[in-house]
Structure formats: structure tokens, C-alpha cells
Image 1 (cartoon, rainbow over the protein chains, first blue to last red):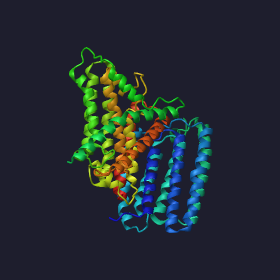
Image 2: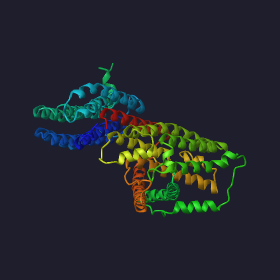
Image 3: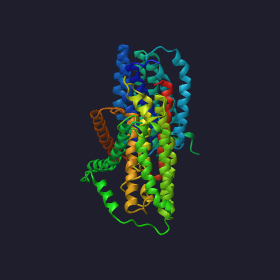
Image 4: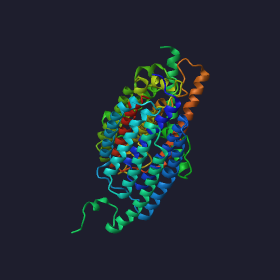
Length: 221
Length: 316
């Protein structure tokens, strides 16, 4: 097997870094650290997108890389951190399952994602084809995080991490989506976080806690 | 087996024995600097050893032969491990005899002996420490093996020198799986050597200590050998880390004295950097509750497994 090019190696390295951060997010108990990890995930995503843009010579990918940098590395973590501070929700988050079980489930999901991606990436011709499995794994891990967390803020971070995974899948499978779609998604995420921020306050006002457990019953009889 | 090879083997082992306490001293110094304390001298561990060797040993009344033999067994296994691990020269006679799995077995032997010796006296603290040590050991060992398997898969060999040579050979290739393995390895290193997230090497608070609790009954030359062995263990782990993750700068068996000297300088540099990094890790992290240790080590194990998966997926 010939040694892959340096670009491909770097991309594989970035993909592995993203997966690593997904796992640390899964095992992280503190909300603030979780948001910092999310910012790092955005930073690696920015690096890998720029690398793909550079190596494939695609102009629109540069734009989406810049968008990633502004939104996911600086703006969203900033908004979330401010929210967490104002909601005083920096304490340890409670998980439904204990952390080692969650991690084991996570490894299972990674195996599943890798198995799923194998036949697809065998057909692909892009430089990033190997990383599709990792992108799928990141999406599933973020999903798992949303399922196993109780607090509203961590669920939103999970949602954003899932969006990161989708973005990475898009760059690795097809060199990114059309510009309009990407802009739309970026704005959606931003507006989503703003609206959810308002929701947090409403939820807390109503139930005096951010535990989404309370939302399961419709009425208090 | 050439006489030159044997001479260099002996030299490498003596170097390891001499450098190990200094490495401990260096870490303690870095930690003190980071914590704004005035640092203890670099040679403090050496002076400590000399002081302990001058003292008369006191043994508990009911101590068996096992208790007296254990320090020598510990020291012996760690010296043997230092001979197996390629720290300066790649293909020394001893290095070629045993592979990485035998090395894990060697560490396990040392652990069993110290746990038995701790329980031998029958004090509560010894038993407590031994139990904790075995708990951490049985969780750390599979993680360490998984880290090794990552390197085995890449290099197609279980011998440390072959792995190091294969990884150091140009062209330079980025192995994402080794990044996972590297983090897992650091976690195992911290746990196995009684460093901060798991155990505090500086504490004498009974309820939290692990390693200290086991060696409470040892004094004088026995204690000196036990301490020296634990310094050697840390040194050995550091050298395993260098062989797996920064394998550059090792000399081959028939290298000229100049190249050899360069390899020694490279080793000292790597140790200095690793010691400083270890001190940073220990300063920024807080000691975990003992019941969080399984979680910490499970994480190390899973990271190593993830490394294997990533290797299989990316083929690199």
C-alpha cells in the first residue's frame, strides 16, 4: 500500500481529533468544559475544512470555513458561556447512564458507523473518503450525548455537535454543500441557539430547574 | 552476541539506574516551580537514597522472608525492564530477547510482589494499599496492552526496537491511531506510577494514598530499593512512551561513540521535556476520588480501543 499524501494524512489526523473530542464531550461532566470542548471541535473543523478547500481548490469551501471559524469557534461558545453564567448552570451535569456505560455504548456506535461507512467510502473518489465513517460516528455520538443528558444546555451542545458532524460529513463526502444551503444552516443554528437561550429562561422560570425531566408531563394535576 | 553489545547493554542499564532518581527530582522541581514554591535540589532523590542506605533497617516482628525479599525482587524486575526497553540503543542483546507483552508481564510480577509484601505484615494500611493497587493494576494493564496493540498493528511486530525503528523510519507519516494510543498511554502512566489524578506521590494522608500505604513498613535499605524501583518504573514508562511515540534519536548497536553520545543527549532532552509536561499535567489536575479511578482507566482503555478502530478504518 503506498503511503498516503501529506494532505490525506493531515485530514485523517483532523478526523481522528474530532472523534477524540466527541468522546471527551461524552465523558465530560461540567457544562463549561463541555462548551470549551465544543469550541475546540469547531476549531478542528475549521482547520480540516480549510485544508480540503486548499487541496481541492474550491472557493466556496473557504467561505464555509470562515463561517465555521466565526460561528462555531467564537460566537456560539461565547453565547453559550454567557447563558450558562446567567443561568448559573455551571454545575456538574447529571447523566441518565453512568459515564463508563455511555463510553462503551459510544464505542459500539463507532463500530456501527465505521461498518456502515465502509461500502460507501469504497465507492467515493474524494480525497476525504476515509473520514466519512468518522463523520457518521461523530453524529451518532452527539446523538447519544443528547439522549443521555438531562439538562437543557448540554442537550443544546449535543445538538450543535451533531451539526458539526453533519458539516464534516458533507465536506468529506461531497466537498461541502452549496453555499446557499450552508448559509441557511449556519443562520438556522445561530437563531436556534438564540431562541433556545430564551427557552432556557422560560423553562427555569416555570420549573425552577433546567432538568428536562419536568417537560415530560403536560399538566400538573 | 558481541562483547561490544554486552558492554553497551550494561552501560545502558547503568545509565537508566543513574538517571531514574534524577528524573524524579526533575519532576519534583518542575512541580515546585509551577506551584510557586522554592524547588528542592535536583539531586534530592539521590541524597535520600544515600541517607536511607546508611541507616539500620527495622523489620516488623512477624515479617516473613517474602517481606525482606520483595525490595530486591522489585528492583531486579525494574532493572530487567530497563534492559529490555530501548532507551538509548535500539538493538541490544537484551532488547531483542523479550517483547512488549513480556514487559507487561514483568510489571505485573513486580505489582504482585509488592502487594503480597504489603499484606505480609498484616497492618490495615498495607492491606488497604495492596487492594487499591491491585484494583488499579487490573484496570491499567489491559489499557496498556491495548496501547501496545496499536503500535503492533502499525509496525507488524511485538518487539519494541522493531516498532521504534519502523516508526522512526522516513518518510514521516501521521498515525491518527497513535494519537489515541498516546493519550491512553499517558493516562496509564499516571495511574501506574501513583501520579496525581489517581494517587498523590507527595501525600502522607492515610485515607488517600495507594503506593505510600503499601511501603509504610519498609525502612532504610529496603525502603531505598523500593523507592529506587518506583523511580525506575516511571523512567521505564517514559522510555516506553519515547519508543512508541517519539522514536527519533535512538542509536543502533554498532553506532560510533559520537552517535551514542548524541543518543544519550536526545534521551536526556526527551526526559526533561516529558518531566516538565508531567509536572504540568499534575499541577492542573486534581486528585480523583478512588471510585473515579475505574472510570479514568476505562476511558484510557476505550481510547486505546478507539485507536485500533481508527487504524482499521483509515488504514493508517
